[in-house]
Length: 419
Ligand code: ADP
Ligand code: ASP
Ligand code: MG
Image 1 (cartoon, rainbow, N blue to C red):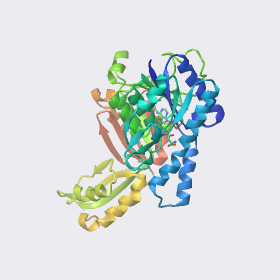
Image 2 (tube, helix red, strand yellow; image 1 turned 90 degrees about the vertical axis):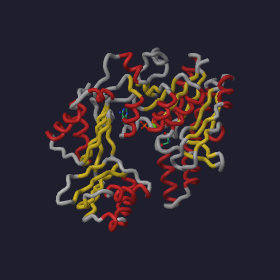
Image 3 (cartoon, rainbow, N blue to C red; image 1 turned 135 degrees about the vertical axis):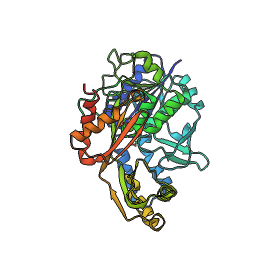
Image 4 (cartoon, protein in one colour; image 1 turned 135 degrees about the horizontal axis):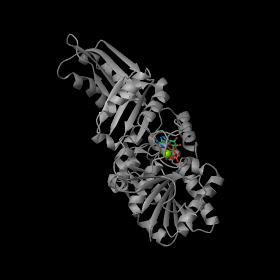
């Protein structure tokens, strides 16, 4: 019998009434003949509250205990949904990460899944029981300690479970009915995409579209898990819900997209990320080895550098500008202050109030001039570009945070994405 994974995010399980609604979605799929594994998040706001409590208890906390605390939100919802399903006459039980087990490494707070042993769960699925799995958590088997997968990690749990039990599809139920050309909360004209290629979704998620956790898209791409993003707020029993007509966005192979349309759109979507900060060092000698002198200390401090711009050199000196995650901003400045003698720069400047806006689309591979068009449009609106990076399928532009909305809306219209 075919298997299905259904994942429900925080807003979808925010109250007991909403958990009942989730149970109706599950019942529909069980009655359609699927063996169903459900993955749940904590009730909306719960994880933030738990994280807050840990920080209040101790600024320098033991990350193993952080995980012990924050994993508890999902334990609650898995039990509540199992009880609700049982009450509706469906056999169901809850599974914590350690009970399956979902084995991870020991990077507490952002652990990676190493392996999922699907044996116990599949035996119970075969026996007709719904598995309600707590998302976001796993276990580091050698130490026996609970781990969590990083914020938004229930998406990753769901895709990993789908791969482990050989599910036909992984349905991600959330508070929007699919992946949009940009965050529909910022741009009401954004339109829902019917299909998005794994690669594009990976770019969109890494560049700020938090509708799916980045790791979940990587896993879906590697294991070829067809992932369908859809809304839990639609009537669970509407006739089209269990059919191919259901509203949502399928994340799939590029081939599947090409089979359904003649040509890929040039631009699929616009994403933005507020979690980067800009660092500039002025008047560094323009000579071999300088980039190594600047970026070596940052690498040693495990700080990821993203966008890099080096000015043309004047009288043998140049300026270097780059971005780092906002969370590492202070550490990056400290590392560079410490290496000042070795690098030999004049001033070190930082700017935290910046945003990276990105234009994404696999169609860009075969179209020239996409970037030039963006630069002109932003210039016409008086938006200054601080840094640029490009790849085959994306252009990222760093701007002042105050212009985020204007830039996103401008680019959205420019590439014909307004509905
Ligand atoms: P969940 O709690 O179900 O995991 P999230 O809040 O993590 O839900 O993700 C859903 C949210 O992602 C939406 O409410 C929306 O504001 C945001 N989002 C950002 N970019 C996009 C996009 N391109 N398409 C759809 N939603 C997006
Ligand atoms: N509850 C976790 C979080 O808020 C995991 C998730 O919702 O995906 O980050
Ligand atoms: Mg989420």
